[in-house]
Amino acid sequence: MTPAWLAGERREALQGWLLVLPALLFLTAFTYWPTLETAWASLHTAAVPGHPSRFAPLFEFKSLARDPVFWQVLRNNFYYALALIPATMALALAMALAVNGRIPGRAVLRLAYFTPTVLPMIAVANIWLFFFTPGYGLVDKLLAPFGFGSWNWLGESSTALFAVIVIAVWKQAGFYMIFYLAALQSLPVELAEAAELEGSSRVNYLRRVVWPLLMPTTLFVFVNAVIDAFRLVDQIVVLTHGGPDNATAILLYYVYQVGFQYFDAHYASALTMVLLALLGLLAWFQFAVLGRRVHYR
Image (cartoon, rainbow, N blue to C red):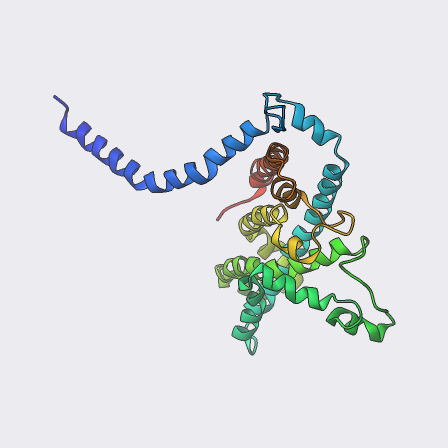
């Protein structure tokens, strides 16, 4: 006969599993199973007339190593992330510090900073497509008084990726500002009062007190910024289609291009596994290395 306490534990365990079951089903159907399917597809060759798909674990990855476009989009993604992440985080922190104090029109300013976040990326891309239009776009009009002539910002290989980065920073900084602002408002007022009594400058107070206390939020923002740096597709589709000459093509857009334009699902699966491996490596670095340097209050 089962003891009453054991029956109670079993009942609680059953209730717990029933509570997580809907989320577990969704994760399995839309995350875990597609990931396993992608990994399995990357180990097979593509089926062509007269040659059915066969198991060849290294075939697609060897093709990746010989693909110059793959190495170019990997470099593009590296440059994109290297510029986007620090610029977005720095701007988000600066905006949060600006609207944290008691200033006139603070609520309106917060709304203005956050508004780009709620706009659809397709709408944002179309707005900036007009801004970057050569000759009569807003960017050329603003630069004309300084002696700059007409320039095709999205049509030149030297500036296309830079233009895409500017748009992404403008779109994402307001979202991260919210987290920094919440963290700033949670800091004890006594710390600022004590720093003022000690005669500490505002810069020294921000560097010695505020910045260390913001490190948990900074780690959270950093993790999300890294993810955002590797999941750009819609903006590229609207603005440049990866051009000119693959200058703005990054890894996830190349996956989309190979899978849905060239219809090579197996090669796209191999690209996806490379992307997942990169994100996994970055996640390990963020939590195993940087996470140890974060002190939680």
